[in-house]
Image 1 (cartoon, rainbow, N blue to C red):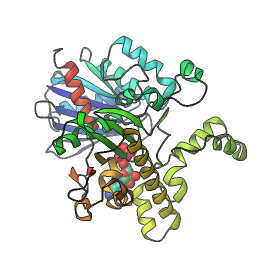
Image 2: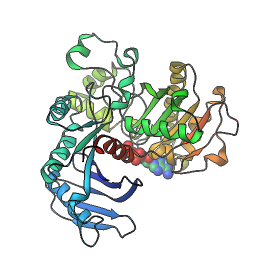
Image 3: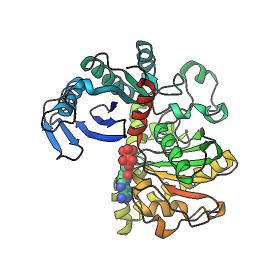
Length: 400
Ligand code: ADP
């Protein structure tokens, strides 16, 4: 069985074709600049040279069509016909309270996705466009939606409710949803496997540290709290997002800087975080380089980031009544030796310490805490595409 994994952004489509017999990636690629001049498809077939196709790609349908053409191309393709694609798995950002698991896409599901647009105005519309494009180009091929929010639906009410008038929850669905769920789920399963323990016996803190960053408390395999909230703005300091702050700052800055609601949203989502504090970049590599060269605000931004992560870890230890393992994942978590040190070096009180030799690792699943540590620390590369492919197979495997 071959599954096409699709992740649509507003102007991009990321894809992977996965052979579910051995979970190998047959090809992957990226369509960029949809609807913008200079649109391009970069297609990487396994074991062959990368192909770059420049074409006018004015919408997601044309993008998906080009992806299928690339996958079936006699020269750089990896399948002989579209019929070899048994199912399509889509990443969908927001499933609201309706979806606690991945689901086969039906007209009723599409209606529910439309209803979630209000809560994820930037993310859900391109996800829906991607699903419609696949239905149009591959009619009859089953499609599955895998939600960023689903894994966090097990949070208890005391963790997901905000202390504002209850009607805001009832009328508008204002509550904490959490995101990056697919990643938190994957790395928690992986770490249990690596430790040779049952997921249901473990208290795990997973730190997904990329441009977007979130942390989750996973007790006995179930998420009981996570740092992102109603939107992906809450919680940790991020590349360009503020993370948690005193809500009174919002009207204060609006008045002082004469900003509209949309402008202050942009200020907190795009101009804040590590970029806002350092004034250097949202990319942690640039900020680390600047800090090493003596830039004090860059160093401060990294300190702020690490401190916030450590504070969340402490609070999740309290929420779970202890912790057995802490996992670092995503771009920064998998690759930044110094950031893991900065975070991990404050956690000795828990009975854990980073082993500098073991921590000298990038992008590889490995324990990084000292031998015999009471609480273990691990690096686990995330693989959201694989989770999407697995869920799609689980749901569609018996349909054919
Ligand atoms: P997202 O999917 O949220 O865009 P990623 O998980 O791809 O983010 O992470 C991107 C971040 O990871 C970037 O800020 C990048 O600087 C950081 N990163 C990647 N490699 C390294 C590295 N070797 N050292 C430090 N930071 C890194």
